Amino acid sequence: MAQNVPSKPTACLALADGTLFYGMGFGATGQTVAELCFNTAMTGYQEIMTDPSYAGQIVTFTFPHIGNVGVNPEDDETGDPVAAGMVVKWDPTEPSNWRSVEELKTWLARRGRIAIGGVDTRRLTRAIRQQGAPHVALAHDPDGNFDIEALVAAARGFAGLEGMDLAKDVTCAQSYRWDEMRWAWPDGYTRQKAPVHKVVAVDFGAKRNILRCLASAGCDVTVLPATATAAEVLAHEPDGVFLSNGPGDPAATGEYAVPMIKEVLDSTDLPVFGICLGHQMLALALGGHTVKMNHGHHGANHPVKDMETGKVEITSMNHGFAVDAQSLPEGVVETHRSLFDGSNCGIRMTNRPVYSVQHHPEASPGPQDSFYLFERFAEAMVGRKAQA
Image (tube, rainbow, N blue to C red; front, side):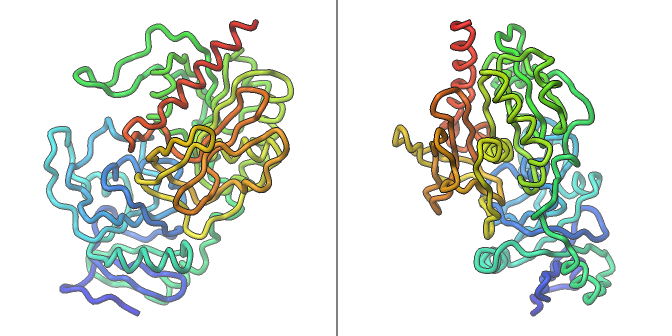
């Protein structure tokens, strides 16, 4: 069923079930296939598009005012956009923000990402919620020429995210050091000049702001590729190990990441902290299981309850897989839970400082409800040194 638009469409979004959404294309031209998700955040579209966790996905933005603050190099979470494309209700307007250095349309075109505007995003979001995240093909042609049968076939031919190890596609090619801290007025980003903790961060698709939070918590951060072995991690003689966020199926990435995590846990008493895919990797290493969600959690308004303190945190989320809390073994407890659907959002070992969360404590939707998790990691490293 096609959507009516007032002028000749220059973009088409085709769902695998044959549903078509027409609109006005912007950004790059061409065609891409991916899983379609929706994000409810009212800010942060640039951070969302450059979040490596969105690899293999096209993002539908439920908030209509996308592009209104432009883009700038400081807000990139990685070097280039990782999300395959974007879907919005209204065409982006000219930016109105003192930090803007470029329009969203120009930025997307230069970065090779396709977008479509003029879409009924409420209808599309309802379809995703009811039917699950669909496989789609998105095409942008300035002349408005579309081979609909080929687009639908391309959507149906997409393999999906289950079984896909995407961390290897977005991880760093080699190790590097990180010392940039969180943005603060009036100096912007500053450098950590007196770190007290050596941390190895395993990069499954790490966001820059996570690394900034680690540096702001007093950490001297060395980032290693997702395929790093336990020997490579421990060769840096870290005070703690961090497991980053990332895209794809945790079970697929776990084929090489889980043995590394198990060896680190079995051979040391180091504090370990994980976020999102890192959370799922830790759960698998401890004996738990993960499941594919119907449409996942993507947004900046997700309430999460700390089951141990009763505190409710407003969090940012981006995941399509979740840890099955019922699968957690003895000695591992659930620490956080989504108040939207009751899904697991955090775990910890009961006898050592090893813990993780499903949400993004660095994204500051609360705005700083969850920064204590980075401070807890630092305190655990202090405690370990005191006992040495």
